[in-house]
Image 1 (cartoon, helix red, strand yellow):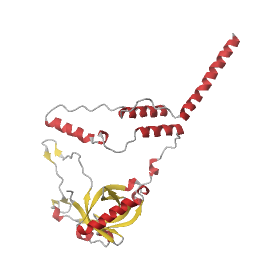
Image 2 (cartoon, helix red, strand yellow):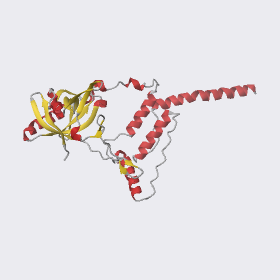
Image 3 (cartoon, rainbow, N blue to C red):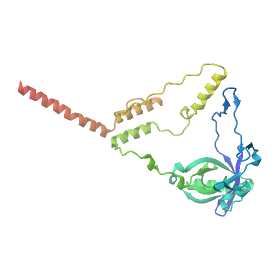
Image 4 (cartoon, rainbow, N blue to C red):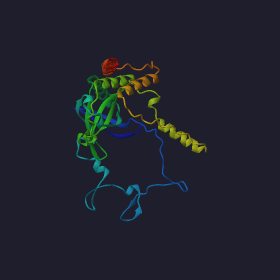
Length: 299
């Protein structure tokens, strides 16, 4: 069972739901330590006091804020727990909004909120069913680790999930990307939509969504343990230079269908595009006929 990260309550108007916060995710990646390559001795980080030039124990370490040069005020964990905020002990729901009204770039790590005891069972279930029926999510404020945060509450299989959120002023504007002003035709957009449709699926189950990096790393570690030759890395495909966007889209649709076991016939170009290409070829035929006529007259 996941350990409790924080205990408090969900505040929903005058309704209070005591709860425990538990991590909703697991990290399955392979973890490395640092070693001295000469003798493979473990390298560790020591915490040293700059003034006394000695290593100090964790019990001697606390938090502090430097408000001026070499001027520090100490802040204890107890003082942080007793902050004069209503969100210090509770997850205060501020509003209910449609999920699509929130930019996904604001949404972060997810946590499960578990009801704390029998007294929380009914109000917890009430909030679950109300959120589910409303098709909305709750936006809340809470305080963890010395700062107030914004959060999103949603339902997942009859459990309440709390997602950490960034404050709106923490999101940088996309203007820094400097999006290109290139124009694309309606036919090219239709081709891209056809490619998206050929790649559409209902879930994320399948080998495409497995962590192949960790598997490859495990194979390297196993080979080194057994003093075997390391597996060869596959040669990466060089990205092709796109000269004809429509042709690239059609070929991509063909490959997507073939990978899913569907008919791998070349995707038909949208009618407008086909007509447009046909129209472009007409003047060439007329020019050829005129050249032939001029040649016969001169003969």
